[in-house]
Length: 177
Image 1: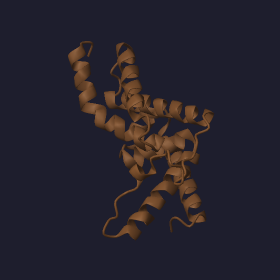
Image 2: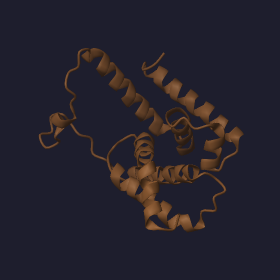
Image 3: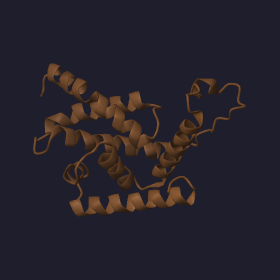
């Protein structure tokens, strides 16, 4: 794994998964290129100490979660400005979707997605990571436990609590029944 060609192969093989997980964990595509670069840089630096006791993907998941957690911390420190549709410099036209055959359903789906993303952001870092790894990345309890270095029982507990918090918040806001 030490030569450049095999590392490039690792990057090529796993880049889609890295980008997908970063978007799901951070809730945005903003800065995802920089975050993915940070993931692969950390992987490159950590490879000499990689003992092969776990799968490389498990090791990579741990790095992705760490990078996402660092991003969450960075965002909390920065007071992000909200964009208004009336703001002429915001480029809001680029963010509007073209009308689809059923615009009402598309709007309802998008509103639900936004509510879910908002509520996911309120979960603890561990709960959010476990929900993403389990539901979106379809990882097993064992794989999640290895990635996050937690006992399986703790993974199950955080998954259960995270689901309940998410469900309760969405029901409270009338977003899901």
